[in-house]
Length: 315
Image (cartoon, rainbow, N blue to C red; front, side, top):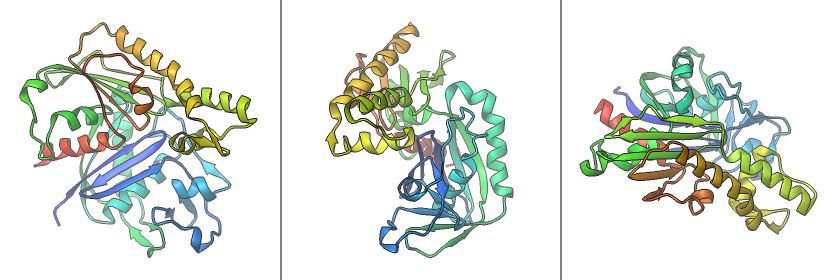
């Protein structure tokens, strides 16, 4: 059986993966399983080895949850289960080629650790995955080839490459492009000059978490309580908390983060032709960042770009 392409991005807040038309998007959290009424099990809920709830199911029903902000994702206690769940759902036990990423700043220091994590998945024992009310699947990970790229590169390749892995516009590809990849914990600033990664590219410990901590403070004053940091996404996406409209508080919390991002970009002292702003919460800062030729990318842009990279590499 030939190996098909699978892409996966292990984020602090969300884990995202794709294989052909099959997509996996879940919060980067898991928790202890417990009895749950069958009516409460949703089609996009995941259970790992019968004893752990993963992602959205853990947020809703686990009393004990595991969530990590360890800046070394390969050493975070949650990474193994999260990757096994996503990759197992997307591939079952079929062989696949993998493209994944690491934050720009940590690419060189953590690349060998990520390689060990990936190769360790191949050597791991089989395990079980259950999705929604479907039957439990036994999984044995079977990774053939893999490629690790700096995060942000996926957004750039979503912009520059076609789904066939070809350059979509040779003129734009020759320009200076800055990817502003806003993650939960890190801000990746990845520069490309004629498609070559610039030495000034870096990651800064500056992400959505900063805005969420401010929002927690505002909610404490307005409501008298606030959600845990790993529960903030739901409130921000819905724009409501405890029955209140909190959209103005969300804008207020993201304003200082937008200013900090603008300052970091200007500190590079480089004139870029295009600014690609991506990440799941990028729309909360996009309007407040004043940069020429700025383009907004959605939460799945990174994995679409990884897919383009994989097609170009293994076509």
